[in-house]
Image (cartoon, rainbow, N blue to C red):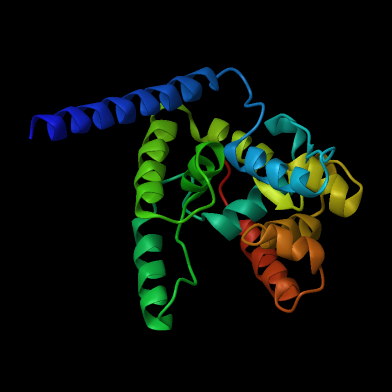
Length: 227
């Protein structure tokens, strides 16, 4: 029993220290930009298994250097209530649960932009109950320490958009040979439509359904409120 309590205490201490480490990073990122994310490091390691000299395509740009079209498209596509919620869209989570239950498999996630950022910055792509719990804790930290504009700025710069492509600037140049500041409404909507499965769409840019998703997002963009 004593050994069990010691192990439990050690695990709790490790959990606390890990989350303090995460919290410290988030506080630091109020005024500094993340150099990379967990997802970026994970993807780079995979690419370098085939090519040791492989590099990611990524360039940080400020919030002002990203087209409002892309900001509107992403919120319309990924998190319509972004400016209003405190990290979790409970209606969206309930709707996703009901949809998954009806289909008998996971077809919808219901994750907000804040939750996606938590996952991208610190966690792996594996899907486990532990990861979902940690994602929720990190989401609370992000929403507590950073304002919506900063959360969105980091999100725009670190999310995956293709094979080794991360962030709005790299994605804009990869797909359109343009800067993120100059994206049109249609271009932005298509980039937003690719976010749920970026590596697939990078290799299948004419995939069935992508054009339809793009049109739907473009129609919704006019109703988006930006942070």
